Length: 439
Image (cartoon, rainbow, N blue to C red):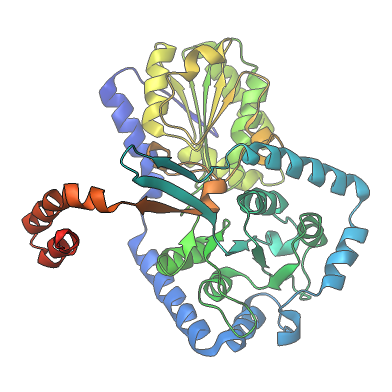
């Protein structure tokens, strides 16, 4: 049995299920402490020995013949990759990137100013950061490159106006990078690419080495070592988010196709044994059919062992008395991906409070968002959709407040400002306002 069926009807049961689901996020403190110790050592080594440390780590874990000359990928390799990748693949990549670009261009925020009657000017300056580093996992020894992650991270940075983008990705055993990653970068106009992975690549981006210049923001997914490095270096550099295992919740009624929804659940279960695939429905008949479809479809997947383990440990088909209760459960889970596979999805959208991305209707699988539609697939996980948002243009921007006040404004308000400052015990603050009224 790859996925259990349970029944939930009360607020207490909803809370209990949400707590159970959150259990997969519970840290293995011993393992995390061990990983953190390793990553701290990597950070220290890269800080002290720079490129030499990058080469040593890469030799140990990725390519035993790696040397310093292979760290920066030459432009010729990018051009060769673009020539080697089939034209049809390049066309699909270009179309996907254009969809992502069009969506994110609508997120651009403008600087603004407002002038009050007394002449005071207040405003906000929106500016891109100068330099961004993108981490792209190589994927199974370079055989399953995460080209979609490169598009989803690079395009918003470009739309934001970032002038310098550096990409790091682990090399294959022969020291090369998968040509689809290089071709995607080339198509996006990115030429600064380094053959380095894991925590040492994150550290190089954050602190800089002799060859790798430090960046202002790091974005891109990675394993526990990558995530730990981002967490430890956060503050020295901005990061996108600390992502957890993938997750999908599907709210469905009798209009849904069981084989389609089983396929959608498996699309997340195949990511990781900790991935959560949850279906919520008021239809027992639909629940039974989906259970059967999961058992049938999982057997034919190349990653069937991973998907089956995820379904067994963290998958669920949840029977609820009605869709309103189902929506309460959805909001308690706050999933990364939410599919509304119901006859009238739009009527339910207003009741969704917490989700990273919502896919409406029976003809909108989560995979269209992962690769092609345009919205970003870098989404909050582990219930952080309660307060966090998808990666966006704003991830690569900063905002500066603008204040310009007149002599009259300070004279009229100095006493109030000084009073507030003295309430906080900050006499110099008070005097800096009052001194402008002394003529």
